[in-house]
Length: 77
Image (cartoon, rainbow, N blue to C red):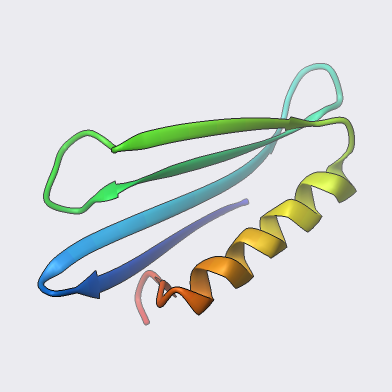
């Protein structure tokens, strides 16, 4: 599952990408990448490991809510 969020403030375009994937050991990995749309490299990438999918999905949903409160919208809206 992948979601890309975008926001524009003072002509600065930012993105926040959330990816929820499973690994070979049955765990779930939440990867958060964010930065400026004007730069080729992301500012930062954060990888979080969860023991099961439900915990990872809950964290994913929490981050989506937090980012929407900060003005991020899904790409294409």
